[in-house]
Amino acid sequence: QMSRWNNQDIQNPAPPQENPRVLITGDINIQSGNFAQSTQHLFLFRKQYGTENVILGPFVYADVLDYRHLRELIVNNRVTWLVHYSALLSAVGEANVALARKINITGLHNVLDLALENCLRLFVPSTIGAFGPSSPRDPAPDLCVQRPRTIYGVSKVHGELMGEYLHHKYGLDFRCLRYPGVISVNTPPGGGTTDYAVQIFHDALSTGHHECYLRADTRLPMMHISDCHRATVEFMQAPECQLSLRTYNIAAMSFTPEEVAQEIRKHLPHLTVTYNPDSVRQTIADSWPVRFDDSNARRDWGWAPAFGLEELVSDMLISIRENKT
Ligand code: AKB
Image (cartoon, rainbow, N blue to C red; front, top):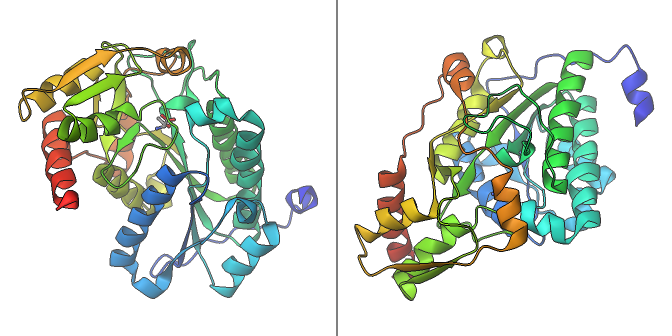
């Protein structure tokens, strides 16, 4: 595969933009959180481009690493856009570094090679986890020191840099958004550090009590899933000439466990929360930005979130209640 990169003749003509054929990778066994996310992206892309033009790769762990199988899917379905969601999240990655390295780095290399070989527009999500304790945290700008201390963060920085390298060297249409913690009813907690911000809603409606693994004052950037979907689709549709960067921060809100609990109490006054910080996730959260500077995304391709904390909380409570009935 390296030899392909060394071929100076590689040209990456702009893929047809009118009717992209989109392949979304996601890993149902390994990362249910991201799979649910990719399923919802599927619906949004399908709404836009038609059911027959969007394919969700029915991948399991082995398939993400199976270059030939991925290539077959891309070629047989005449795919032009690839949206790559397979990854192990921060906390679960620390518990299984070898597997995280395989999925997050080897899997990504396959996808990068295939995108280059087939002239695809490639989207890879990055994260607040791509920053570390030496990064500016309030706010974290797009371009700054990135020295994450998790395998998840290291693999995401690697992905950002590889994609940008292939863009500059061979014209790969690589696009990457750094997501905050994404909050969704249909996305079960998937081994992330921001998972509490999903679980607290379910606990508030079931037992009325949440035990939080982070300190009450741990502030992190967060986003409602529908903003996350819209950002991704709008960014994929943005004309290349509008992009001054290939990797952008996107922001919507930042809150602490105590602040989200207070907002939930406006609807459910009896919610109680106890704080029992676990050393792995608290250390990770303390090394991440408390706020994202997304001014470049706003300026270049018009990013604007629709959900703040108030809207997020009412929507989550309504949606969980509806799902249960
Ligand atoms: C995690 O907590 O690992 C993810 C993320 C912020 O990337 N939700």
